[in-house]
Image 1 (cartoon, rainbow, N blue to C red):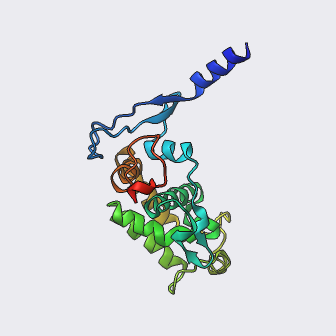
Image 2: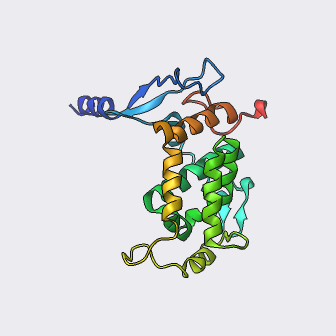
Length: 211
């Protein structure tokens, strides 16, 4: 009974699918296994399914002093994808005000790099604009310094005040959701073509013989 229940649970929650992005033209490798995990009607994008499968969380590379890719064994290009994904999620949750207030704000310069290299230059420009609203000087990696910079703005929870990032938030959301899956397509392309990860089973660290 226990085995039967476990089997049904596994089948009901996780299905390893062959999500072929045949109509999206995002991969050069015709043998790439752009598989994903399906939960009911929702299919997890390849990059996200792969990241969770291998528990890739290289966020130790970012500190108040800045970004040091040597702090993780994960290749730098994968680090950039992870920081973009985490930072994007925080912005979607609470806008740039929350992003800068939280520790995720340390990702901003590398998010710009990822967007530019991934062909999302307009998104990079929006992030850069938000950073310029926060401060007209050097971008503060320190969370404490960002919180201090935000003090001159009324807290966005105050209904009598207008969040200075509202307009920028709207542009950010619109650009990444263009055609429904613009960000997911760019992230899948990055993982396959830039990072060389074509299958869910591919490891995040290069094999020694390939280095």
